[in-house]
Image 1 (cartoon, one colour):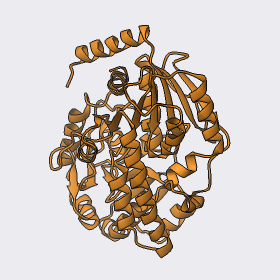
Image 2 (spheres, rainbow, N blue to C red):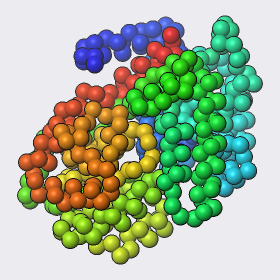
Image 3 (cartoon, rainbow, N blue to C red):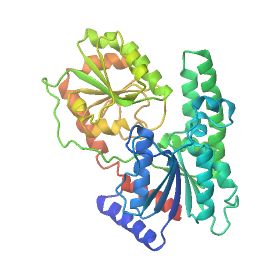
Image 4 (cartoon, rainbow, N blue to C red):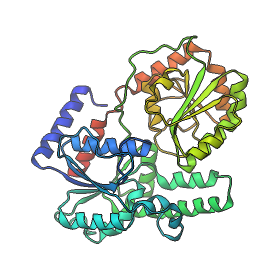
Length: 420
């Protein structure tokens, strides 16, 4: 890991290069990423901002949203937002498309038209396909960008992945239990995702992965491709000191976004396994985050230990009142960005096995992992009053992560990959 001085020197060298040879980047993402309603928007928005702060001139093409757009701390003029008001297509129509639902919804007629204009009107040093949802753009790009990578002036194609989507979507489809039509749709969507991801990776010069595990999957499947690991940074609040004491409420907390089917499945299954166990022990569980109102309302019925709060402007007061943060994700893959909120608010983490991927946290030392939802719930009950151990977990987690998650490093690394 670079020292603070080395990191500052590296970042400055990147800015010096781009100051004289400004990298012109066309960045295609799904939707304007601010406010940060979920992990996907947070990762995209912060990485775009970091790349621009490293000296690149970034033009972002995306769908507009109802919440706002155009946030960032990059120098004025380094980010230009090109948002399309119309174009988001109904999810069910993807059943009749060769594209998976997330790419189909993003790539409507207006988006394709806007991309065509941007490709014909400017010269780009790099074109970024941000997430598999941007895979719709590949045929439009291929119509303009030479396939031969040695062509003078050819823009470099970059794929910024949020998951190894092939394995993630396959696992979600495999674990789904419920409506047979939905099960079939998920399986078909997973197969379409596999085909699109393979095509995107094969077409790009550089592929970034959000965890080392995902990077290894890409390397096995595409050994000729340059793979770059870009774990998230963290730009939120850091609590310098916290002690969990007997006066701290005997609360556990789950923070997240509960709109994707995998998130809904995980949350519903965990609450079914945990509610009675937690209630019998007098432990309260608070669920905070955005989700379909009907789903959250139905989920909260007849639960004894659980309070469903929904979306809030500031999650800090809820974290301050918690002794344990829970990551109940059996499926979904990727880096769990909520880990960093928990770590830097000093709330000890109890998680399903595999949920710590991409982080320096280690089970039994700086967090706890469990094999089943039942074991996770029992682990919370057994540890909730052991404040000495809980404080040891949160201290070790903070120390393990404090110097590891700098967005500026991630932006500089991607700019170097573009310039090389």
